[in-house]
Length: 67
Image (cartoon, rainbow, N blue to C red; front, side, top):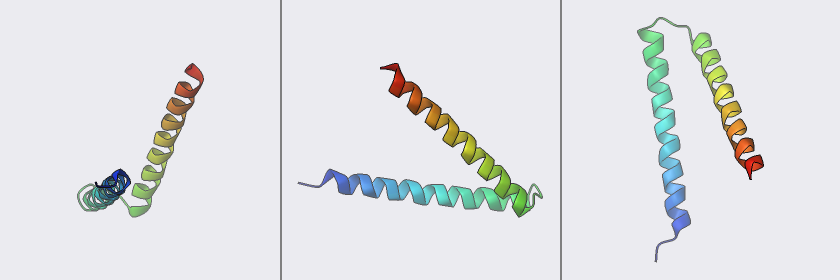
């Protein structure tokens, strides 16, 4: 019988790989076609990650204290 943890690990690895590839393609496209500098792209990515993290934490704490 296959181990379910092995399937989850492979799934997470594929998702991480896909996220890295999409980020690289977006950075290339924004740099070449939109003319943005690398620093601008990096700052916007960090701000977006911070907003996403704050939204995830707010959702987690809301669900935790709702019960």
